[in-house]
Structures are given as C-alpha cells and as structure tokens.
Length: 431
Ligand code: PLP
Image (cartoon, rainbow, N blue to C red; front, side, top):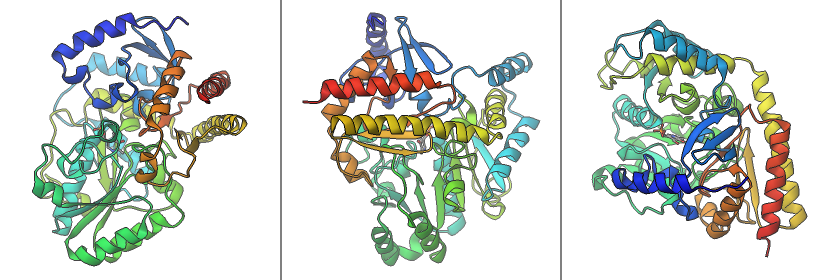
C-alpha cells in the first residue's frame, strides 16, 4: 500500500478555513500524534477507505457504534425503506416504542427510556433529572471519565479534553464547575471522604463503569458494589454512563457483567447503529419526573428520529443473539493474546488492558488503574506507534486516552494481520 495521503492533506487545509481546527469533533484531530487527519470516503465491513484510495483495517469503528462493521445489510435495508417513507415527522412513531421495549428487555434496571440525539444530551439530561429527583445540586464525577460536553461534566474529563491537555473548563461558569466534585477512579476512600463532607448535598455519582475515555480500565473487584452501596445509603443516585459500554460489553452493558443495577443509565453509540442517537433510562419512579409526565423539561426536534430509530433497532435486534458476544470475545481474546505475546517477546515497555471488545495498549510498564497512571504513559512513543500502524494499514484512535473497538466484521485473517503489524511496529520502535 502506497499510503500517500495528498488528498487528505489538501482536504484538511480547506476544512481548516471554515471549520475550527478543521474537524467537527476534537477527537478526530490527529494533533496528539502530530499528523493530519485522514479524510474518509467509505467504510465496508472491517475496513475504512480514505479519499486517496488507501485501505485501513479499522479499530475505531466510529468510536464504538459500528459493532457489526460497516454497512450491515440488516441496517442498510431498514434505512432504505424508511427513506422512502420520510426522514423526520416530529410526531410519535411505533418504532420508538419498539426500541424502548428492547432496551427495557435487555436492562433490568430500566423501566422507561427517553431518546435524545447524542451521548452528551443523555448525560446532561440524566444529571438534571438526578438533581430534580433528589432536590440536591452536587454531582460526583470520576477523574478521566468523559461524559460528553455538558457544562456540569466538563471537569477533569478524559477523551479529547485529556488528549489536547485542556486545563480547567473554559467557558463553564465557576459556580457550575464547583458543583462537580472529582475523585480518582478505583479509589473507594476518596468517595467516602466526599460523602462524609457533603452527604446531604449530593444528587448523584456518574461514571463510566468500565472506562474507555482515558483508555480501557476495569473497575477493581468490589468497586462498583461499593459505589452502589454508598450512593444508596446517602440518598444519591448512581448513574452508569454506558454510552460506550452499553450493548458492547454485553447486551445488558457493564451492569449485566458486573451485576449492578444503577438508578439511571445513559446510552449512545451502538443504540443508534451509526446514526446520531442517545438515551437515558431508569426506573419508572425516577423517569416519570421527565416532562410531559413530570416537571423536568427536556425535548428535541429530532429526538426519536425515524431513520436513527430504524438503524438502532436493526442493530439491537442483531444483538439479541447472545452468540454475537461470545464471537466478539473470542476475537478480542485472540488479539489480546497476540499483543501480549509480542510485548513479552520483545520485552517492550507496554501494558495491555481489555474488557470485552474494548482494549487499550498503554505505553507504560506499570499497571494502569486510574487517570494518574494513564498520564504517566509515553505519549511520544504512542505517537510513533500510531504513525507506524497507519503506515501498516491499521487505523487506531489517534490518542493514548482512548479505547480501541473490535467489530464483528473482523475476520481471523484481519486479527492475524493486526497482531503481526503490532509486532513489527513494536520491534521497530524498540531502542
Ligand atoms: N459518555 C461516554 C462514556 C462517551 O464515551 C461519550 C462519547 O464518546 C459521551 C458520553 C458523549 O457522547 P456524544 O459524543 O454522542 O455526545
């Protein structure tokens, strides 16, 4: 593969004139790896094709949604059919109830679901709901977790905020930022201290139950159980942000695999099957606080959009088949074994974390269990790795603070190719 990217370079120059930073979401910029972003023409199965005609095996999958790979016929056919009937009505459709029923079926902690257009809207609305339901203002958030760009949650955030090294929360009022208390992930004592000081003021604690936005980190044994207990004891809501993990780690998300029932859950990514969708959900008593059933206002011109609902429903229907998760697990396990073998063979200073079909290769030798550990990673080495992997035809998230995603479309051959590229690149980078 020649991997020439002149057209992408030109497109980026043109975009920068009319779009801030040339991209519509900072995570798409390649600034941390000191490259120009690659402009995409199309996706097919497990592969992305750029506008210069280069082909890449994709480990980003649109940052998670494309769990079935690109253009799965079940989804595309539904979209084509809906296109003929109309793309938006601003009135209820039966398909919205059908998708909500499926979510209720997959998630025992959920009785009711409200559809929105992004993960950001979902978490923003869940926080508002938690505040209204409890009559309290403060929120506990975990350092390095990212919950979209709503004001209350844009404090010590991961993902693009971490990648770009943005300090504080520019544009967020001091008062709003002060209502968000940040503690390290996997640290029970820090949460105990906050509850000891502010117990009656805390509306809720929100977290990514398995983190993806500072790279993949699993909760330590007992951590989620501890959070469930302490929030319940203090009358605060436990909010699982499953925008990334929902329908990915299992049909019923992280809450299924760890056996914890949060009070509220937020969803996005897979739930829209590649279309812009988010949702927040929970027990009836709490969800009935939302207008028009209750007083908490939240609305959307395009919420429950029929195109988006069709793509989401077709995807979720595929995921009804639990075998899909064992297939994803065996693909991910193969990759993990291969990467770990490479690291060991080359005695390379790297640490591999994986939960289900999400993984991160951290450029540190230490165990990674929170944001402070991720910050110790060798960013320069990551950038060199990223660049070489792109040259080898493997498309990765352009940041150490992100998760890689495996899709069902990856074949055994694709996995072998990725493992071999990882070996060759690490060998080249070994000094
Ligand atoms: N929550 C989590 C856990 C996420 O990973 C993201 C996005 O990556 C969001 C919320 C925000 O979702 P969106 O980008 O759809 O607004």
